[in-house]
Length: 455
Image: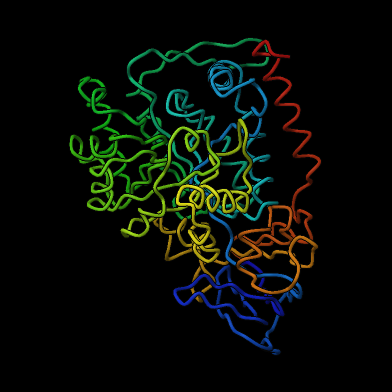
């Protein structure tokens, strides 16, 4: 049973339907859930409660990152440009990593998220649609086990590669390695087994991913068949379907040809959308993960503001953690504002309140978890962060939402709580040794570089 917590004397941003801001509020947590949120002096007679004084801090829901990648925290800087990086990381994931790499990288990724205040994230397992490590269950299980030990909430998307070329993977022992060529159909069988074997009632859940195919690619029978099988698997397992890289008509093509989307679909990037794409989003209830700091947002624009005005759920993702971005969701809030304000030449676009909602309740809705997380309301899971506002760049003490969305960064997080469990307090991990996590990741990185011939 999780210890009861009483967080008091802070500025509480509830991010509920009324967007209440409690100037001296409190949040009571019992058995991992929020039992009370109020303004003023907190109740005095609560037995066996740990009291946290949040004076000088904002108390708010944990941040929710709806699009990132497993593996990427250990591939930063491995290419002079995006194309070189993609080629390098694809080779690394297929040829130079073992289960310990995935476990050590997962712990490092979780550490960064904890220190940035991201309590929930959705990650693709691998380097995009062509290097998914689902040839066997062990790599994903190593990742999930490490994430569970760190205590963060995560959706891990596993799925097949494209069926248009062969995909070979190396499996390492202490003294040698074996090479396996895997088919997309075999990968789907592994994904199905992973969902069945991993507990569904925990803080880590498994989703299904599928490469994004254009209208012309869907004319290929093997592409069409794989898409149908993946769609059916996601629906049979009641799992989210996550895709990375929609653009320029791909949403409409997949909706029309495959009936691919429903309200359990999350589509990342969504740049240069057509009218038919937007109509398909509205018709199917599919959600969007907007990644303003990602490279795809350089090559085209996601019409996030227009989509939200039409009633489509739009969340924020970091596309982290490589080649050139971090898990810092505050950075992405600021980037999203500038991205769309510049487009419209109007700095009133995407208010601080809207940005904070995109990074919390918007993310919860995108992951179909709005009844569990995303706001500070009685009955919800206690995913809470405390932001230290007594800092020069966050002063003077007015307009907390504006200070957060415009000036804050991940290093301002003082306390991170998931499911009522304190993971970090005073910027120090509570149950883990940060240096040990970094050292472990360093060893995995050096071995990976040696195997890849990049040492």
